[in-house]
Length: 289
Image (cartoon, rainbow, N blue to C red; front, side, top):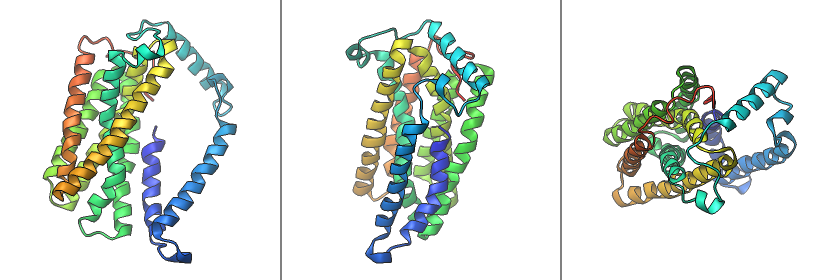
């Protein structure tokens, strides 16, 4: 998961350079961006056919100790009672735990996806050049790459998932609302850092918590359902909501408000979902990092 913000950190200045190739060989800058980054994606997709395995015991890129640990951890986790038992696929889509987890994940998915699309334009609105925008845009992702590892390891060390998921969500909300009140560049970058640190630090503890709720036979379809709904609402709907509000108001800051409200709803949902503490202590069952 660290690859997600780390890739944005690396690619942001590279994308800025590609955009400045505007006019070369008769192509626009964004044409070069799509072509060069698209070709790389196709090649990596082919490489995955040869690198990825169906089971951890077949993963040659893990050493023997790592393979043994992972297989034993999975076997232990499969024996523990789960909130979501084995269910037919149609019932799984209607299960309240699965749907609530999807809503919670939508918060972080929406924050990460929306900023990945709109953050460069927000920064550029302060009068920055394309290259300056690319460099500053990478800063929050660098910080998120480091802190998400720390936060996941801390969750494993203390054996707590609930508040290690809630705190990053609160950081997202504070960052979004504070950004909407900021009118200068430096405070805006600081608040964007808070949002993205929260969005990525959320992932390790959340997916460990979600996995602990699902039975062995439901975990693959359950996590896929949670992820699909979150990407549809967060990565699809909320990205466009930001654009609609920005177009209607002319304000990048006000366009963040729907995301802030979504964060509050998601925090309340998670606190209610885990209010009896069933999912708070799962150390030794599923690792966040």
